[in-house]
Amino acid sequence: MSTLPFPKTLGDLKRAGWQSRSIKAELQHNLIAGIRSRENLFPGVIGYEDTVIPELENAILSGHDIIFLGERGQGKTRIMRSLANLLDEWLPVLEGCEINDDPLAPICSHCRKQVDDLGEAAPVSWLHRSLRYGEKLATPDVTIADLIGDIDPIKVAEGRHLSDEGVIHYGLIPRTNRGIFSVNELPDLHEKIQVGLFNLLEERDVQIRGYKFNLPLDIFIIATANPEDYTSRGRIITPLKDRFGAQVRTHYPRTIEQEVAIVRQEMAPFRHNGLRLTIPLFMEQVVAEISQAARRRHDINHFSGVSVRMTIHNMETLVSNALRRSVRLGEIEVVPRVTDLPHLTSTMKGKVEWNFAEAGEEDDKLGGLVREAVHAIFRKAFPAGAFDDFLRAFTGDASLNVSELTPSGVYIEILSHYPQLRQQAERLAAPATPAALAAATEFILEGLATLGRISRTMHEGHARYATKQ
Ligand SMILES: [Zn+2]
Figure 1 (cartoon, rainbow, N blue to C red):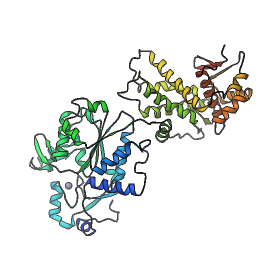
Figure 2: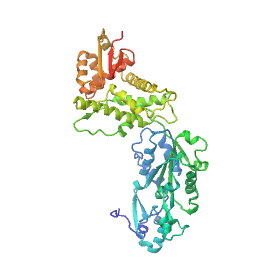
Figure 3: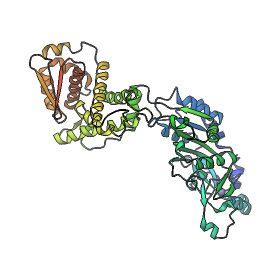
Figure 4: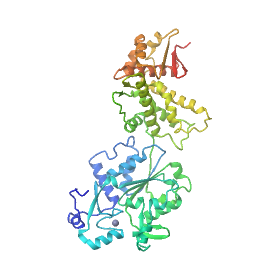
């Protein structure tokens, strides 16, 4: 930090013309500049351009503290963290201050004394904006000491008086002074802590172990809550609720395209030397549709929601199963396909809460969800009648057997017997490697089975597609 070409003392800072401003004024100023220059202020935030972001910007322009209401897995944390981009890149603070004191208006006794003693020679350091964002997941066991502070017995033993705020060991919020602090799942905070938080924000004082200290912090506070927790009586104390000037409602991705874009951004990178991953678009869409369809179901609990994280984890599991196959078969191309989908139940089980499912019913219900998703995406991918030629050739006692461990070469062999099928499979497989053609073939066969055009029977992980008898 000392290498920055910025003023290093209070005197230099004043002579450079630096002026104090509040955190909210700083955010407003930088937001206006960002809107004017049309830069993307919330990089990586997908699907909120017309809904959440305008409301968020209005709240900042109004200087309102914000509560984000939404079910889990709607990107609330990401959008809150992205607010740090709206801070000045560097902020001067009095060197060594635990609560980032403003050099022109210090509030802690240590800094006030330092400025009294050293005057314009008081040293200034510069804080990067990435260090001015703090967050805490609220749980019932979060204490005043965690968030606000505690009396430091060592400082008391050193002879400091208890009425001096120099005896405080600061908690997370004071340490984020002149920055942004976010509380995740605010309703889970114990009522006593909510009162402490309110006093700090509104009355600008803190009570620790019965002692009251004045602490005029300057913080932009944001919080999240599940809408049902937030509205249910008694979960949030009314004065704290009133303090949030803006409620911003988040939501799940409205389209499959948005959900796919989020998965591409968030999923674990594929780093395996000598292997090449290609995820067909139709498989991405199937995975996204599974989550979207689950959110529409009435037999799934919507209080907790179906997180976008489920979509991401499903995709990661799907890729892992394809990877396992490729390694086992000695293939270089890694391409997820329909026979990998049953493995998603292990990812989904902990994430989808059924309203009435009996024990043992869950696997069937999840299997049904997956099959419906394949059906929906297949119908979008192909017009009715696209396979009439193939079905005219696929007659009599013809049948095709595939499984998750069937080598890609087997599908090439199948396609050589059915050029009408190969033609359509090639439309989906780009580039048309054997593994990609295998995935396309399975998708088509399964799609035709969900349409009832051919039959499918499962036996020990093997799918047998046959003509309808
Ligand atoms: Zn200080």
